[in-house]
Image (tube, rainbow over all chains, first blue to last red; front, top):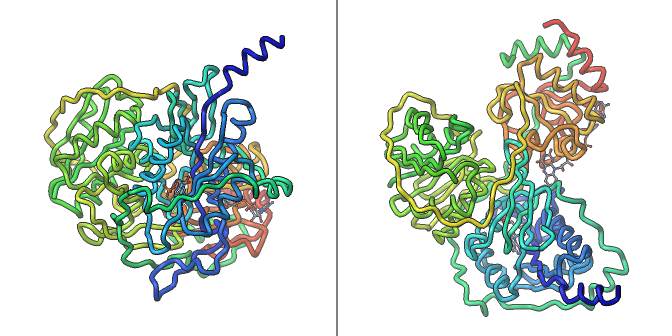
Length: 267
Length: 308
Ligand SMILES: Cc1cc2nc3c(=O)[nH]c(=O)nc-3n(C[C@H](O)[C@H](O)[C@H](O)COP(=O)(O)OP(=O)(O)OC[C@H]3O[C@@H](n4cnc5c(N)ncnc54)[C@H](O)[C@@H]3O)c2cc1C
Ligand SMILES: Nc1ncnc2c1ncn2[C@@H]1O[C@H](COP(=O)(O)O)[C@@H](O)[C@H]1O
């Protein structure tokens, strides 16, 4: 029995998981535009980890806890405050963090983020990247797909289920697509982008928040990576387009509803 | 300036979002081609009948049924040497493939274009549509998806030429296993003229049937909030919102939905909005043309029993 256990430990999983996480405006906060700068005003705004990234972190932690992964590494690209988001990931339980430090003037787009992540994934020789399907600030829904193209990993987008094969060479994912749920088998190495129903992310417990302070966080200056970050897209202007209140009319019965809708010609 | 559209087929039918892409593309160029990746060469017929298409380029191979994104993105990137723009409708099909094509071409794609201002300037939503940004691309090749609620859906009536492109199939690192489609006789959510949508207030899958009954009565599609989908009242493909489907029907009837910004993101452009909710302060009500402040079960029972 002891021998058998020893045998197993020789086959300790070596799979490293990278989880790119983004710091964004808290999703329950209304975005406000600063007319002077023609930018969304984030100066005093409440910020948070992108909700999809929280789900990605949770999935990586579950894999580590089940013994399927050797290490979980959160990566975030941004200005100094981004460290807060990486601390959150560490407090949730990831093993270490990589902070790619950028200049605040820089307008990073998914192509740039994907190139930076490609650099880190190669350096770490990570076999699996779990990331959000979209960042709720720019709503691009691109970075994972682009990263997979740059490093030629298999790709599973919008996943709501993730099952690693017993031999850890492939993964079966369920994808939330417009017509229903699609199941695919991806050979590792892979990039997966997660959808909301994959799991319920955990909260960081107080002891884990304390523990996180002593976990390793590496800082890399973006400029040291030699990646072309010239903007491909220029934001010319932005405009608030929040919902316009409508002059609501109260109704009180089915009859009234149908007659109003008939008058409006929408039935 | 030449444009190619990535066509999404549902069976042999061209999707509504591809039809919106044709309209958007026609604002960019007089020469719009369509690209079809398919197993079945006979699918060229529905595409060549689309109005506004110059030529249909077909790549036909058995492996292109439920195409793998790794394969599709490579094939499309290769075709792009002849084109300035790649346009597709914003659907999970294109959102999966186009960014990977962008990476292979070293360009920055533009998601969810709602308006075309010039040949390189576009309007797109940020922050769940609470902000609209005008963006200018400096890429040589422009890759973009367009919102199907923002452009007319091009009809039939064309007779485009059809050309089969012989391409060698790239190897693939993923494979299709299965598709669990929800079957419904009702109108399709993203193109329906009327939608009856239910939220957490419905309380259970059994109760959600009341929404389906009302939808049938009104010849409407069924929609849902994220909370309703998360709770298992209905499957994921009915979710309306920032991360679900974007709709703009003539009539959107929201029952037991509070109106979180992520939900409003998916339906705020509806022509007439009706809200049934017992909470007078639900944000949804401010968006409404008609509000019925009532217990939703009373309202649904009365509506379902009402003889129109
Ligand atoms: C990243 C992210 C993405 C998201 N994407 C989406 C998305 O795409 N789509 C989406 O919908 N949400 C999305 N959400 C979730 C969104 O924030 C809300 O949580 C969700 O829309 C709430 O759903 P609901 O209105 O059904 O539930 P609730 O907010 O719980 O509202 C239920 C409503 O029902 C009413 N009600 C309850 N019982 C009765 C009764 N008996 N009679 C009358 N009225 C009753 C209540 O007054 C309340 O207004 C997203 C959230 C995040 C963080
Ligand atoms: N600055 C960033 N740092 C780390 N990860 C990022 C960053 N921007 C985007 N990502 C990752 O890419 C995902 C999709 O973002 P997007 O393509 O911008 O919608 C996010 O959920 C993150 O996992």
